[in-house]
Image 1 (tube, rainbow, N blue to C red):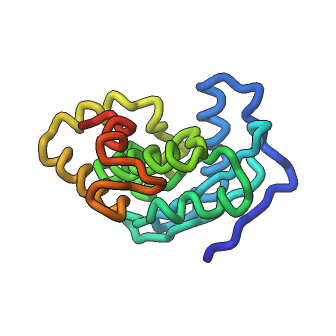
Image 2 (cartoon, one colour):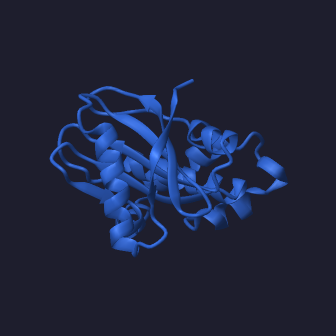
Length: 185
């Protein structure tokens, strides 16, 4: 398990508009990830006052990718009773644009967020050149990609891997409900 860093100075998002929130969250992620030569996946823990109270590196990858299980994204939020999280990772190569695997991971996180009642405030990708990409601000990119039948099949596989049985998911939710939550089938 990775070490959770709790902040002495708390970054508050409560007074910020959407654009300022993304910029502030990206700044926190830049401070954690900018010097990393490999991809890392970070979760920022946000309390009910919209303050970032801690962060955790939940996965470390290589130059081109990081693999993280959805379970690892939410474990710390549950343990530290954080009602909200910000997901973030870096693209050391410099282009922060979300890839297909990034979108599939974001979608799986949103599904779990709905089930666990832990709000995902955004998934932000940062690059060492100071740029960032908010998945929530570019949701139309995801919707365009999901029109591709092959990608829809990949998304279905992600769902199948998250759900222990063919018909029922966690807490007895059926596949049709899960599909509606995801909004893609």
